Length: 357
Ligand SMILES: NC(=O)C1=CN([C@@H]2O[C@H](COP(=O)(O)OP(=O)(O)OC[C@H]3O[C@@H](n4cnc5c(N)ncnc54)[C@H](OP(=O)(O)O)[C@@H]3O)[C@@H](O)[C@H]2O)C=CC1
Ligand SMILES: CC(=O)N[C@@H](CCC(=O)OP(=O)(O)O)C(=O)O
Image 1 (tube, helix red, strand yellow):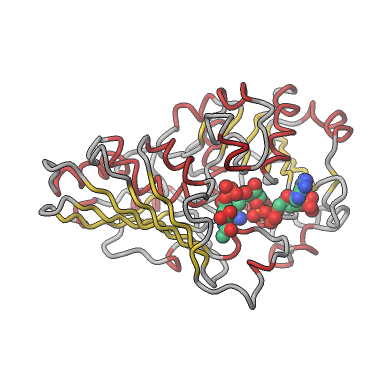
Image 2: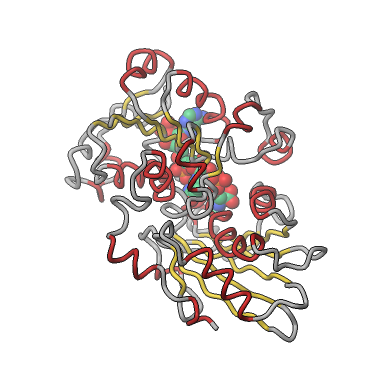
């Protein structure tokens, strides 16, 4: 297959290129940056020396992407991965789709169903509301059937990925109390903010802090996908990569420990689950950083009907690049974790959730 990665100079783009280079279906890969990028014509391994000599693509130079490039090369492409700013993805996705190229967009440009949420949470008017209707939300563990048929996949944000893996088994089983918000506390490493320089993410400035409280764009995304109102409290922490979402859910009065365990079993003891691992103790970011896995643990107090569940992921992998490859695999009718996880490891991931009881 012939593919392209737009945003090849960014953190997510780099992880995607490294993973796609090991994928057995990929024969040709174009590494693309924006028209005026300072990384144009620079070899990928010069920009990211840790990937030097790791694949046949690592010495390839980054090419400038524009309409002319697409007119010349689009006919040969099977799929494109867009690891670009939201507004840029929104602007270019339709041009790829018109040429029958499947789009895996890692920005937030196509995640929300309501066009009016874009000015409110993203700061721009959405020009393609029809694509919001046709885009499939790429949470691989839950939307696998739809992803398999999609032309445009909106790969989830990093915080929503961890939050929804923790929450959806419960909301899908309707175990939560209807009139109480679900509370999500998220903590992210600094790579979540991308590679560009900013005061907020500079070395001397980063210290554990809450930010964007009650206004973060991931709040409507999490609410939309779990079908329940949430309060989302994001925090920035002084480490490079990794993310944790710890979620508090008030359950209905009849809900037992057995009901909770059954809900997680039904969600994750399935053939479709390759990367969600239920752990015996509270998960740590170091257990998943630089891996495609999500680790999950919960505790339910039956007397108070309060459930606390914590999920950790690598924000650049399960929170972005490896999740996009799960979606690509599903869309290409391949095993969901092809090139990410070995079959023996998948069997271990489907751990019996009774360890959590
Ligand atoms: N970091 C994370 O943990 C996650 C990020 N995402 C999303 O993935 C996408 C990429 O994020 P990330 O890699 O972190 O960001 P980076 O800032 O590291 O990279 C962004 C990329 O987009 C390009 N770019 C920047 N500005 C423009 C522009 N105005 N027009 C066109 N291209 C531009 C940059 O390249 P150049 O200027 O060289 O062209 C660069 O390749 C974003 O949409 C982000 O929201 C999703 C999940 C997790
Ligand atoms: C630490 C940090 O700044 N994180 C980013 C989230 C990055 C991400 O995954 O989100 P999108 O794909 O929706 O941009 C933020 O809070 O904006």
